[in-house]
Length: 414
Image (cartoon, rainbow, N blue to C red; front, side):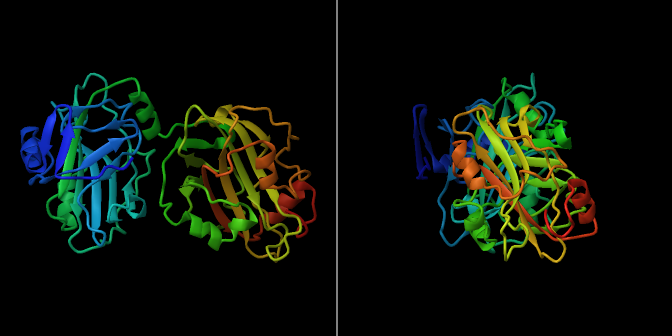
């Protein structure tokens, strides 16, 4: 539940007034370790199962693994920057990689973080074993000039540590003339048994099946995902409801943007990276299909199934069950652009028996005339997809090779 920020935060350990925030930041040495000037107002912070009750409260990595809800005294017309850093990396006694960046979102309109520009996706606390308590500092800046141009800044997904060590929020604020933070908070945390999961996440956990690396990643620029699915005609051609999250997908270690145009040559092999926000206790189904077979204006073979993997436990793709092996895009000549969609569904019944015909990589039979909707209904998948993505593709000189292996006449079938 979103918290409403007031000048007073009541908690069982006493009352912390906003006017005392600055002194707390100084006594905990956030000033000068992180900032030159402390905020005056308190930032309300709430994790999934835990409210941060006072500045400096000790929490566990398990409690802070998910993105928090934050609230402050905002103006609807204003734009804000939100940041979370750890100045005690790898330890407070020897902070040689100070600061470690955990979260950075800019151009947040009012308090609508979903509409902000995420520069560093959220990563929970992962203090190394034996390094004692770390301070985790959360800050909000009001952007005096309104929206800022951060096109030169690198975007950091939540499965990467690249660009996180030796970050300085003070230097970032100076660079973009943000001034002093208007609100802040801080908690402390030390190692617990969840930390290895953070390390695993930041190292990009790899599994070898189909040369695919499945990484647990969070939401990436999804504020307009519904509209984009409608604009591309995927609603209603393929889905009734847009995915909740954007699904990052990479071919040859190069991630493509939603609705990018790729070539059959570029996508001939299975993706090298796929990621979505995962629940380790759930099972998932991954589907790749083409609703434009053989033509978008006359899709009488809709849909062509290119890939189907079921019973994926959390992020362990190697333990998933492949029903239909990967087949790259192969749109017929002169058929224009085809849309290729990736969709992830949660399996409502958990792990289950999929009584479906297995289809090998170079087998065309069973792929055409397939229906995602019917498959979802038949196997009781959660109707709202967990995540999704799509690219556009048209014929190139690699397509005849695909058609030859499939045993179909080039130009007449996928």
